[in-house]
Amino acid sequence: MSISSFLLHNIAGLMFERPTRGLTAAVVLQRLEQSQVDFDQHLQQYAETPKNRALLGHIIGVERWAQARLRQCISGPTAPDESDAYVPAPDVSFADLVADAHRTRSDSVALLGELIDAGVPLTRTIVHNQFGALTVAAWSHYIAKHSMLEAKKMR
Image 1 (cartoon, rainbow, N blue to C red):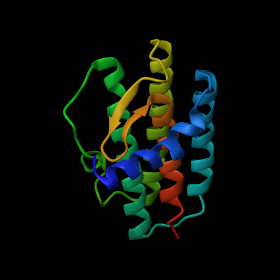
Image 2: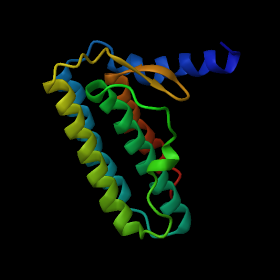
Image 3: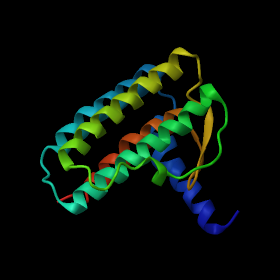
Image 4: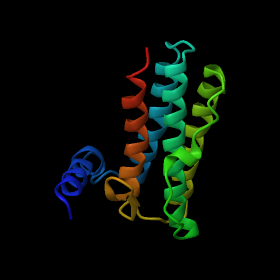
């Protein structure tokens, strides 16, 4: 393992695994649900600009990609892919992207609920392209944190 991979995996442990360690499924689900409220409110303060559209498209693409990774817990492994394949078209309006981001987060909440209902342990791991193996709980935290960190770049 390279030094950069080692560092990324350890950063993932601190940023995504540690905050979810020992949480119940109900709490993990509730936190993802709350992240939707927070993210929706955050997006209301921004205007239509090319930069904001690109950032929100990126956020949506990453979240859809994360959903595809999490679905592997039910459907089995899939070929590795990148988040770029999930990004909306660049000409979509900011208002439509905001609505799409809301639907995408609702889909993430529903998917996490499905995984919990199916008995998938929150400790089950799925590989992230940069951070290595993340637990289901950490993926949920990653989805919430990634969107808010990226949204802070909006003006």
